Image (cartoon, rainbow, N blue to C red; front, side):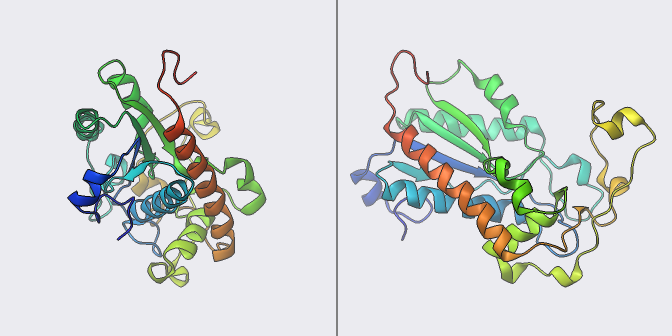
Amino acid sequence: MQTWRLQEITYKLVKESRYDVAVLPIGSTEPHNLHMPYGTDAITVTAVADRACERASQAGGRVILLPTIPYGVNTNLLEFPLTISVTLKALSGVLTEIVHSLDHHGIRKLILLNGHGGNECKAFLRDIHGQTGVFITAVDWWKIPNDIRREVFEEDGDHADEMETSVGLYLFPDLVHPEDADAGTVRSTRFDGINAGWAAITRPWHLLTTNSGVGDPRKGTREKGERFVEVAVDRLARFITELSNAEMDGTFPY
């Protein structure tokens, strides 16, 4: 039993404890090239959250880790078999109910730890602003160590690429099969503005990709994944601890 994991602890322990911060991991269920599991986003964000909550607890942070939401917004991957998608409205509805539950129980600080690029958590923050006494912050875990990304990884990509493969080789190597990976090549559109990035579209991934991968994963290593993840975990743990210790006064969070 790990005392920061709500899914594992008993009512006896909860009654005896005080929690200032809740962490809610959010993943997705979708293919990740040919070599990574459908649950990659949920497995990864859960592992990052768990390690960060452990370190924050050891540093005196009063944190509780909520069970992971395993589904996300995946409408543009639905042409791949067994992709499970929920709408942004449905996801926001679940998040709203969770926030109200936390508010009811006196937990006033929440970190939405996102593991999937399709989950627009910032839009949810705008929608719920002013409707609750809970301070909510959204964190895309893979952006935490953005400043070292180019130092660690050689190839660009954004789905089952070198970075995600390296992270998987570090956190859940038994579920990653690099020998099955394709090169993660993608097609360009017909339009310069979209290819340059200043015109945005929702990408239909069955047309964009070969096997759902974006970016070459073949240079991924466990060592690269460890360096990237450990920076993210350390920074997140410090943030959790600082948030736990912060007084919610009249000018909070400023």
